[in-house]
Structure formats: C-alpha cells, structure tokens
Length: 333
Image (cartoon, rainbow, N blue to C red; front, side, top):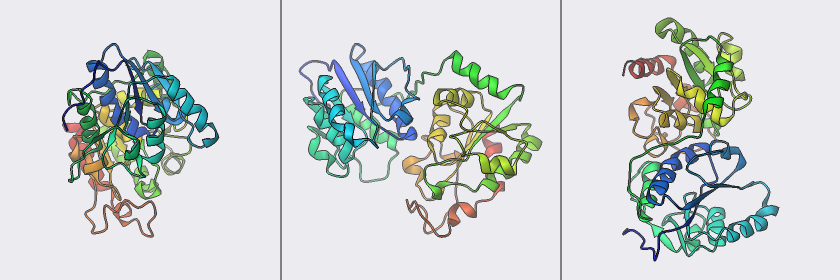
C-alpha cells in the first residue's frame, strides 16, 4: 500500500504489542525505524509487565504503558490512560480484538493494523496494511507496517537496553566458567519442547567436542529437568532478569533453544544458534534470516500449530546427533 500521508509528522506514537517476548523482539526493528524516521516524536509502547522487562530503560522509548491482561477490571482505566496520551498515530502489531479495542480507545486519528487481523480487530483501524497470501516471516509483516507509516523497510536493527550493570550481574552468575553454550529448554507450548533428556544429552559432547561448558537459562523451573539429568551444567533459570538474559546470551559461544522468545533474542544478537522445530513453521516464526539454524524432521503432520499432541513425534524423534551437526556448522561459520 502507498505510505499514509500525514498533514504533519506524527508527534505522539503508540506501539501496541503487549506480548509475547519473541513478538516484542520482532517489533524492536520497527521501533528503531520509527525513531529514525521521527526522531523528535514521543514514542510509547503498550506491553504486559512480563514482557516489559526487555524494554525497561530502552533508549529509543519515551514511555512504557503496562497492560495486565488478566485484570480486565482495569481495562477502563487503561483506556482512559490511552486517551489522555493524545496519540496521533497508533500501530497495532498484535492484531486481536483486545489490541484493536485499545487502538480505537486511544482516539488517535490514524490507527494502523493488518488487513487480516483476527477477532474483528480491523473494525478499529483507519488504515489496513495488506499481508501477502504466501507465508512470510513475522518481521517481514511488521516491516510492511513500518513502511506504511513512512519509514524505510530496513535496516533490521535490534536495540536492547542492556547495560554494564546487567553484564556484570550475568558475569557474576557465571564465575570462571570459560567459554559456554546456553541451552534454553523452555517454551510456552508443551508441543514445542524438545525433550529434557535430549538437551541433557548435549552437555557432555559440547564439552568434549567443542570445549564448551553448558549454562541452562530461562524462567524459573524451566531447566530443572535438564539440570537433574545433567548436573555438570550450570542452572541459572529464574535468576536473570530479561535484560540480564540478554547479557548472558551476548557472550555465549553457542545457543541451543526451542522455538521461544529467548531464541529470537539470540538471533537478534547474531549468536551461533541451533533451534529444534516441531509443530510450528520456521518460515513464519523461525530465526529470522537464519534458516540453517533450524533442525526439524519432515513429517506429514508438521507443522500443525497445535498446542496438544498425543505423540509429539516431530520432536520426540529428533535425536542429539543432528543437533550437534548443526551446532558444529554454526561454531565453524
């Protein structure tokens, strides 16, 4: 679509992308493009507190508006906050009824969303960004929206607010561990989890073949099963903030992660990466620009996009060997 014509450049911009962590990471290039195109604008971001940690103190953001999605009783107060923000441009990158409603509640004269947004969200937009019929990566879709509001389509740049204090905290957890690989066994769908015993099976060969210690990271409890099976690994799950997790990944020699938010952080940091994929499509939500980092079994039922499965063959049958082979290629790249 042609770029939207503004009577004057937007001065108050709101990004609506409440969750999840991977989606927030995918939106960071849009924030960078908006800040480049409209350097003097006030830019705010509507985000859940869980994901807001990755944006706290961000140098390109002027305001974070928290949205506690489990507390709908506060929705009216949030709508009033959005209205008082006097935004003249709102971008809904979530594309659901709730995000569309908040976009409309802002009262902004220009409210932009995807033409194929779900749950009647397009009813709340003044401008609709078309989406190709073919499968494209989420970031490509987001860049189309940035382009629609007058930005260039690139470069795809991720800016994180991680600072020296975060890096010092991460280093303190590691001690004198030396070169390390980070394994991230958590994910928000049970069907996207490569089995814990497979992750544990990586620890010894990572040390023996590549000289890498293993650090297990993620949310509280996500690494317990792996740590129980591989006591030689250092388990820091639940001990890092999101900003400290970024610092931990910055220095990793290798990252092995399920299809998850932290996996996308590793991509943004350009770390050597291996990511097992099962029920989801790497073309749509895989590591952006890194197809060689994906390991998957080609089964007729995959991708199914299902959060439940009676057999999970796509990941249960994926052995340690193919993952190690991709790890070796990534390390030698």
